[in-house]
Image (cartoon, rainbow, N blue to C red; front, top):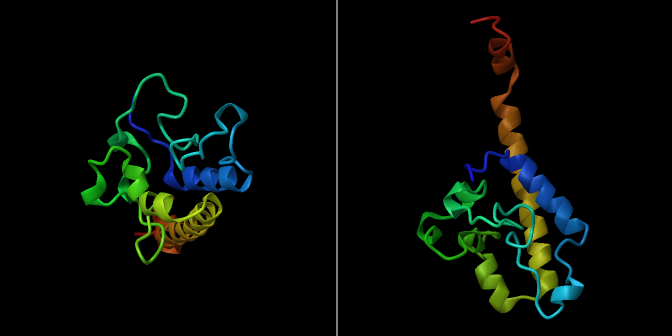
Length: 135
């Protein structure tokens, strides 16, 4: 399977919608376990896949700290709070509701930051040069 070339902003917006629509609720056929953030979501390149895609090819890879990239599930180590809480730490200390609230806050903040970065990089000067005018 090729590298995940989806737009990270689109993926994060989809993940937020998935979260807000109850996507991480327990499934009747797997009521015995909580759903795993990212892994049990279409965000994961390996979601419902018969072929295992290397995590390094995932659209979330740039968000994973260098020291966590060799972990079995690297996306569990994305820092979600200013204090450094990750899914790995939250799975041990928080309820599913707390995890989902933390994830939602992180998704909203990250989406906002990415949108602001893109708006700055697509400022008026860049728009003029993109049309081939000016400079």
